[in-house]
Structures are given as structure tokens and as C-alpha cells.
Image 1 (spheres, rainbow, N blue to C red):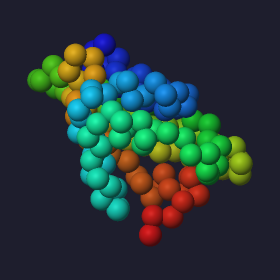
Image 2: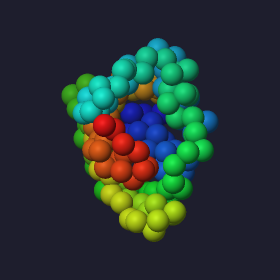
Image 3: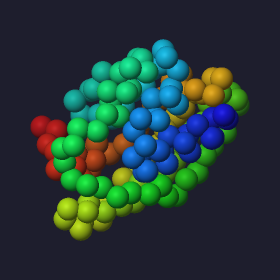
Length: 134
């Protein structure tokens, strides 16, 4: 798959809650970081760590979301894209709508993500899930 196809499979897989499929989009050895995470979450370095990251816990609200406003920027490096998007959705437990914009900088090699910088508003993400970061 191309970097564009991998990105779309990733964000649509999250929106559709295809949690078991998502780790397979990443290389066995990878480097995924969330630079704006307030707790400075450690990098995810293996597919097994990503499987744990994506594993549903059953806690929290039921969220319905869809991917919107996708803009994918090609770079001079054919492995790297910068992708802008948003998850628009609703907390099905409360009826509260939400919008969570994001930017991913992805390096895809041989159809798998080998490096990703994921930029989100983690405070809004926590609020949507009924979590506290501090």
C-alpha cells in the first residue's frame, strides 16, 4: 500500500473500531510518538506495543466517529506524508458532539508505518472519553 492508502486505512480503522487490524499497518519495529501528549507518553516501538495501545478496554463512553477534512501532503521523500484530518463524532452515552483534529507525519516503507508523529489535542481527547490527564 502507498503511504496515502496506509494513512486512510489507519484513520478509517480507528473510526470503524477495527482495533485488531490496526497493528498490522505498522512494521514490527516502529517509532510512534505523540509529541504533544501532556504526560509525555513513551514512544511505541513494536507492533506488540501498538496492539496493546489499540486494545479496547471496555471502559469509557461509546463513541461514534467519522473521518473528515482529509488533506494529504506529499513530501519530496516518497516514504513520507503529512496528513491533516479530523474525527467528528458524538459521545453516544451523553449525546455530546465532538471534533478532534489531528495531523500525522508518517513514514511508510514497504506498505507499513515505520515512523509516525501523531499530533492531537490530548486534553479534548481525554474529555471526550471522560478521562483526566492531570
